[in-house]
Amino acid sequence: MWMVASRDRIKFSDPQIHLASHFQFEPGDETQSFLLLGDGKHLSLAKVRDQPHVFDGVDLLALSACDAAVAGGAGSEVDGLARIAQDQGAAATDACSGSGSGSSRR
Image 1 (cartoon, rainbow, N blue to C red):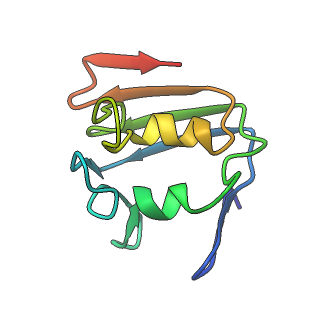
Image 2 (image 1 turned 120 degrees about the vertical axis):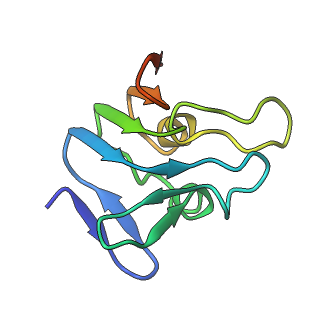
C-alpha cells in the first residue's frame, strides 16, 4: 500500500508516487485547499502540513491535479501542494495544473 492513513496520521511509503485527482486551491486558507481522495473525502493542505515528514522517502511525487502546482504568493499566504510536499520530505515534485498545459518542476 502506498499510503497509510489513520485519523491522525498519513504516511506515503513508495519512492515514486503519482497522484491524479482533483485539487481545490483557496489562496490564504489551507483548511479549504484540499486534494480529493478516492473515497470522496478531502485531504486539506493544513492536514498535510501538520504531518511532519509525511513524504520522507519519496524520491518523486508527480501531481496531475487541478491547481496542484499553484502557490499563493509570498508572506503568510498558503503554498501549493507541490511546495508543501517538498517541505514535508519529497525529494522532487512534478506538478501540472489546470488542463495540464503547464508544468511546475522543482
